[in-house]
Image (tube, rainbow, N blue to C red; front, side, top):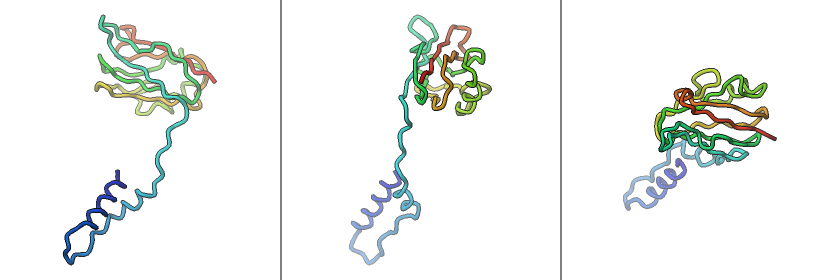
Length: 156
């Protein structure tokens, strides 16, 4: 975006009226923006899980069962019926996964508890780069008693 603004500023200066004014000089930080390397996409596959209420009133993750590889990412999206989140049962995760998840879960609300998503289409993503293999049972904190739980299996 800065690069586009810098280019527009240069075009505007070059196409200015025929007065005696000196052409405008672009801001110093626009030059730095031009040399920043583009972001690279993280490795692994991105999987999406929808968090929603079905037409018959069930609170669910879709899909409720997911198989991924070490290095993949999972994005949970609040579709309807929120707020929703992703929380893991300590007894339902592989050995070593607690420390991994707590280090990986950005903006978490507590031990193994992801942040609440209030807005429709809000998303929460976890990277499983370096994750211990095994099955991870998870649930939505506000809707666990309504059966909103699921699992994902991480393999090599």
